Picture 1 (cartoon, rainbow, N blue to C red):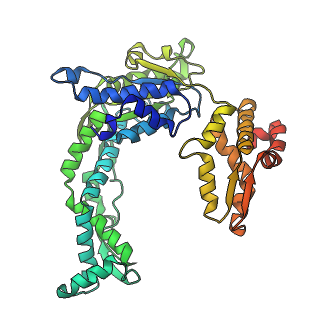
Picture 2 (picture 1 turned 90 degrees about the vertical axis):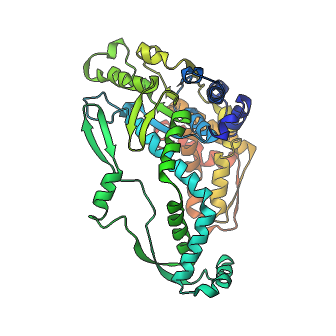
Picture 3 (picture 1 turned 30 degrees about the horizontal axis):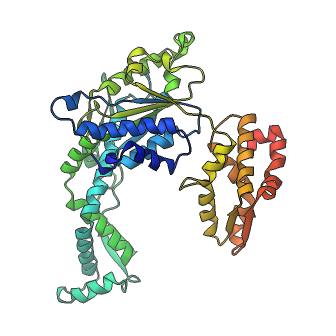
Length: 437
């Protein structure tokens, strides 16, 4: 388990508060679920394996923070995290993705995560090897390398250009999907090896570049050589099994009420039954080895405007014992969202335009005016929650963003009159606001 999971529930909620406004009940639920993982690791004997994760269903409209809470939780725990949409999966026998691809994708992400961690741990040694390769490429004799290595580290050679042979940056391994009665199995490593040379890819290529870029290319290649990929895969599988988090969005789209259990949507219940073994705990074969899902934490979410959680099949309901309802967002929430989080929109736009030399000053009444217009637009059109703020801010600063390169050194006060001047006419025109805001 990563150190992130050692946070207390109170500390987890406090950390989530830095990025997500309100929704305390949902934050408490995920904080307890994460802490329970830490507790389970400290339970001895056979009982440890018997303790199942307390999966959660989040109920609430779009744009209220469901995904952000799950994503921030995974980052805090340094856990492999995958978001999927339930509506993208189809019952076995129909055209579409099979649910076992969730586990395969999560394991691929974990391998990438662990690989990067392992590379960081050997980067100092990889950097030394990279320096040696750069000096060799510059034809520096062995007896004179110490002085030139110092010059290299001090940046004195940064303007030199050289031709090097280095492997291109590693991307995701190509995969071949094989359809079998059990679903889709992926075979990546063999296909990559088989077709790499055929299409002229995968091997080292000669490229001209400046010394700093050559150092980075060599260091990445050397770090890859220094790590043990077999160990990486073992650690990644263990990370998925013990701390993986899957966020299943739009779970309500596969929950059919009595009136929807016939006709073209009959496969909805089939998707639920296919999801059930994964959520209950089963073994899925991946290209990195067999992965058990018994202790993966599943967080499902949906608006549940039409269907209800009770419309899910009973077996699946039983696997999501924790249910929390997230509140819709109003004007006061928008004011807090615009200003309080570390990554608030006010901070983002201020930083973006500062790169052009334009300084934005958001006043308190200006922020409140933005929040009021966003709330009004949500009332008149589709309620898309906090996502409406992005639309309103883009429209508000459209002219400023376009002219920014020509306005270096300008200071702009974003107060209530400024906001109303640019947006109030749009809000009054209800038809136009539906398209623009």
